[in-house]
Image (cartoon, rainbow, N blue to C red; front, side, top):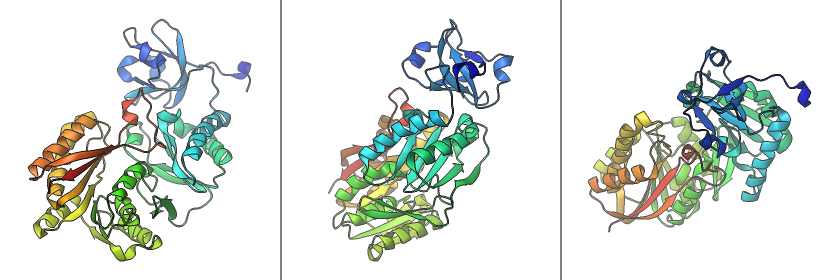
Length: 402
């Protein structure tokens, strides 16, 4: 497409008092109260492309607009005349791939981490010759065919799943759906990571089927696990437990509310040759922690990796209370001199808030400890410095008193 072939694009404009400097310096979002939302803007379909102007009508770049979302505009390209097609996606995917191929010897990683990789609202996880796309913004849904074409060309994956589920899509006004776009996936995929084998269910599992973000934290926990008894709460498909067993743990008990997830964890333990040291317990995590406390159980290493208790600012206070409760229930289960790992994937709960809630819980559980390590998401989940929400994962490693 030549420049003369480009359609005339609508323009949207920041309010006079809105801060254009942040956009110029790399902040990728415009909130609903920062944009002039006249009838023309309100009439734009969700995911429409438009040129964003500042209050002085100077162009800032090409954005996608969704007037039904609190994030009313997302920056796609600093060039207001950019053409969003398969070639545009190829450029961004090649850049993302070059980083992951340098980081990892095998093709199992997060390939695209949304805004941090220049593709707002898009998550892509790769599992060898298969990939899962999460189009969490309306514009991504509108361009899914071009994205899938570019993904297949750049990575040579032959199987692509679109997982259209989750809270983010609801906020964008998008329906939930699961669609296989290319190839067929009829069984869980074995994923090697930190010496363990995980079974990822790409079509029936949670999110994309596996959480790659905890990879470095799994590894650090495994370094503490030699000859240790391990409790892994909210294990999903084996999480910390399988990594700990690969690191030489004497035993691991994996707890989760989902029977299918625990079945995949058990299958992963068999595939990794550690099934004789691996057991599971299904149930609500809080109930199981309380029951283990009543049983007088203790472990050398206890890990709690819950879902996001504070997914938004309105949920922050309740979420921090839940993190504190987890720490209070888990701390007494740690043997003297043992280790407690507490994780949060809530971007609304920053590191300071989460650390304070965890410390309060440990104290109320009758224990004291040292914070020996703070972990974050792996480098295949890069953080956009201007967007705090892209640095959501925290993992606190405590050594508790003897």
